Image (tube, rainbow, N blue to C red; front, side):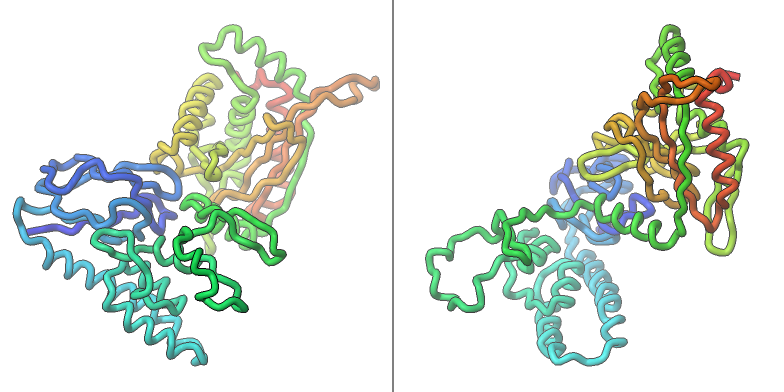
Length: 423
């Protein structure tokens, strides 16, 4: 019997995936484990595998966004009539979407424009469109019959509705027929105009950027942040790093020293290695340090598992490998999960000091600045010091000021006398 393949939830924050391309075509014979397509999630580009054997009978969306549980394809026996199974699955998806769309409408007071919306929604139910496209059209009061679909067999998908909504219109003072020369103009103009009339380019928001905006917004406005900053004299760390790199199989970085110092300090200060769960606080027994990596689409945080039990060279190799995968968007979900503490380092950009937003479910994140030469007092005399600032962002629901200060003091002692990291 034909089986409908739906978009799986490939990460805990995923709401929709974007089909980058299909590696199989209709008519291909499939075995379990065969890769069907590449899917871009909010965190990485991942491979969609088949768990069935049979023939690929139908592809629903050749490329573009598909909501979680949206229909992707149908697999069955060669020559099988898959349309009944597809219609049943499409009906089930549409019913679920309509229930979600109708729920808030019943709670609101009637509005003057609602009859027009209702007519559009009724017309939309008879047009071939994805459930997400129908919901967006219904929310916007659009008639899908006026929108051209770019999907399979003219099916209207999310991007078609969004393009229609964002399509530039002529000023209201000019009659529609006054500019016949514009009939062949592209559907989306290269520039849009802001409220002040200046030209501005509009760039679609990636799945990753959407999730970053939502999660960090939730973190910033739900977790009461407070910040602690400490200065670290890095002269001994610089000398130790130079000596280590003479014998190390890999080139140790200052970031590796920071990761290791934090991991060792977290073992001594378990309150920092905690998570807020609403009605309880989880004290994490494992020390898994997330390292923020900047990529063009936003920020990814690969995780160094059991960082306190790894050597500096092991941390170096793992950070380089994971950072490389992050920039190629090839990180797997398990490589970005399980963090108990996060480090964000902008020192390589000559940033002296900054504050970072806590990366849930962590209770803290540490921002690392650059190393700068500054005048310091040593043994009562003025000297040149190599100063690095560390700023700890803390969730006050979990961490108190004294706890955060003690943790930073321990990290400072590790970096100012790095030999302690080797014992």
